[in-house]
Length: 202
Image 1 (cartoon, one colour):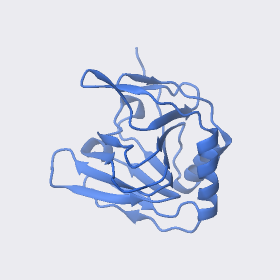
Image 2: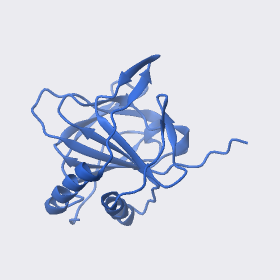
Image 3: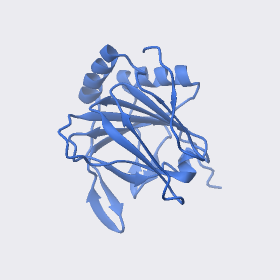
Image 4: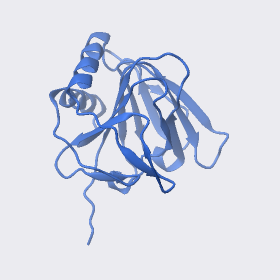
């Protein structure tokens, strides 16, 4: 990791900070290769507006036992942590003071892979979830849009080895996405660390 200064992102009613060089280039290059090769990638289908569609990216869910959660009709059961994931997780926890028990990985193969507008507001993540998003590989644009005040927008380029932290009421008030791009871009791997809470069904 390198010395870094956090950059606050302008998202009213949210709490978002960005570390552009959380991992140095050498470590980021190494982790990109390790994550690409050691992750069990899946091409899943999800339910949108009552229809089953293939995700425009590859995904993988890893975590502690008991950290399964459901998204768009898809039940995510965690696989066991790999050494590369543990390394990234420990680095993020050490420098943020937050604890995580699970991670969602996304592999964007080309500029045509994307993720649509959404909030990470599943009930398993608690009332005010903390999301730590680490990026390796090609730079992609990350966009914010306020849920009620449509004129409020923000965006930032997520670079190789960077860390984006979303905390507080961010998921209550803001949507985010990775849009498609016509630019020629290489592969990008994104890790979003979360804390899945056990739900009381009684």
